[in-house]
Length: 234
Image (cartoon, rainbow, N blue to C red; front, side, top):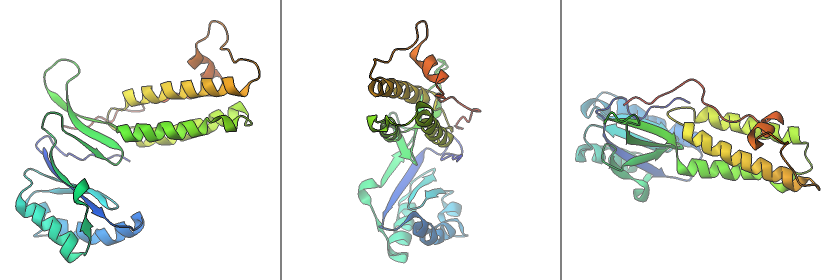
């Protein structure tokens, strides 16, 4: 999915609301569809506050030039009074994304402004897989390469890892994921090397003159690499 939470550099202040409800994402979409409608209709904050709404199920971000009390009150009124929902105040905050050190985690990504890496002195909107996303991915890869799968043929096991990595990388291609991809590649290489050593009665050794990563690729492993660039607009 291609997703851009900030349409232009002037949108620095954000109002983030999390609705607390024990319902499926499908039901949340059906119900909150009407919140989307009133938000963008004539007389809604999309017009008088120039605000934008980005929502997935019951998680959403409202972007605005200024998070005025009127805007906050409108959202609270529509969700809690009109729709009868409860806002999770512990997960709700007003954030100036342009402030030093500020960041936003949403839909598995972290959004923050970082200094230009080429020393030009300006900042750019950096979009990367969040720390939680990387931690969850490592747990999944750990499970896929667990020692209990030692009975599987090596090409089968590596093929399953490749299919999972392809799906994960397809979602996280947006923004600047190169460093995250490198970290996942390092982890996969370590896990596959450990798995091969555990499954053999004889100690596993990489052939002389060949690096571990190159040997694993010869066995079928496909490291993550960037596809076409999808830079975030600032």
